[in-house]
Length: 97
Image (cartoon, rainbow, N blue to C red; front, side):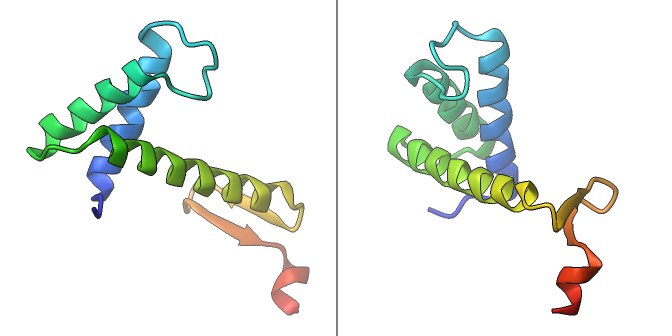
């Protein structure tokens, strides 16, 4: 299933909201089943489509991989994040290669 950007944002926002206000989780970086079900139902409601918990879990794993990749890029001192343009940029030495 292809997620729209809006569905992805709704899913992430609901997980974050649950992390802040929902039941206490043993690991705040790994949402519990209750938080995943809550976020899944919110996306269902918002999009008007039924999205299974399995699809939400797969989406969460994709988001973790994307975050890890993004973090590794930014941990490399030759790259930086520009919040004004919302883009990763490379320093001049990398661009000359």
